[in-house]
Length: 54
Image (tube, rainbow, N blue to C red; front, side, top):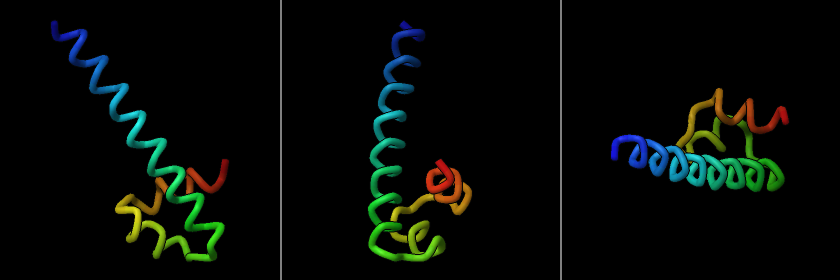
């Protein structure tokens, strides 16, 4: 059962990360700065920089 639970957690986390990536991209398109995006989306600056560099 542990394997199934781990898989479910990974899938759920991927969906959350994808949602946050979309928020970061949207805020960037609206002209927000990196620090503001990190604060609004409640993510790290590193996450914002990696998302926007793609």
